[in-house]
Image 1 (cartoon, rainbow, N blue to C red):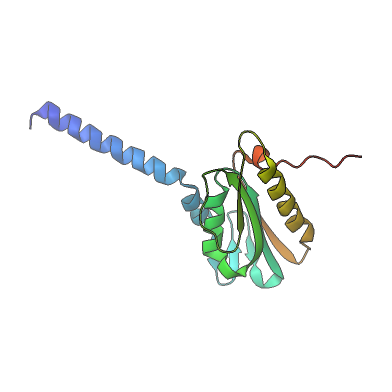
Image 2 (image 1 turned 30 degrees about the vertical axis):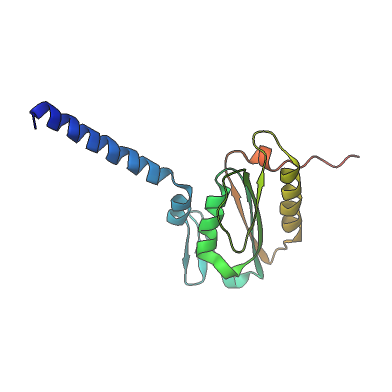
Length: 153
């Protein structure tokens, strides 16, 4: 191999490594799992630690194009501890979830699915008391995916 070809080959390898590292860093599920953990009955976030024994129920709500990946990460940490959950994502951005209801909805144009999902999310939030932990997952696109007009006066 000529020095020029060897140099170009090395540049391609470096570019591929940089690209793949960037993709991994931008992976939503990986980011959540690096930021949050479960340690001895404590759900730890970068900001604080929550003693799960202090809560009656755990709810997970959310919206946004990346919220299914975030919900999947939270389920992998908390699993059966989750009492209920509802997350809304753009059509085609689903993940299999066991404890959190996932709804696909219109983005960027809100639709009926988004409205119904927003009502479910609001119902869960309204049900929560000071004895419950509510984990809210929000990513880009949430305003279109969770449209809930104000009640008419």
